Length: 203
Image (tube, rainbow, N blue to C red; front, side):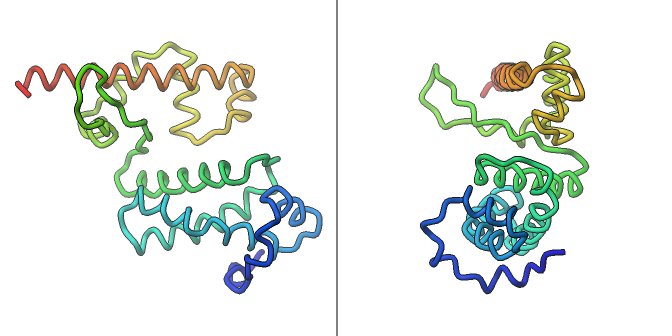
């Protein structure tokens, strides 16, 4: 088990010219937690920012960062990671969603902000509204079988593209396409529903 306390004492300035990929390779080759500590310290503020974005609570965010450190230690041996920063962000986001699920009894799906191109108005952050109004399940039911399956596995069950490909038999390219198209269709359906609701309410 890697001691997280060792991470705090590592000075990253000495290694600022070493890429993420090289640090990860050194960790794998030498099994020295110092290299992983340098890598995690490099993104500690990013992780804290992600946790604050989702959890809105400083103490919970700090605790979540520590949980992410542990998760990274457990998960790194399982994957070939080409872009550590992107992979780390996914781990952080999934950890935050797990906490929110336990808190609310639901897994919030992070949907991109939708802007209304027909009018100049503030972008609409639909995440909270979708969960509150129960639109997510309704929108999911409108997707075709492949999109529904991939969206559910990716966002709700936190499966990777590879995991989904193995489980469903779809190619990686198909999985990526179903998720992208499914997410777009979710946004369009929910946006339409929100606009209809506003009209009905005279807004």
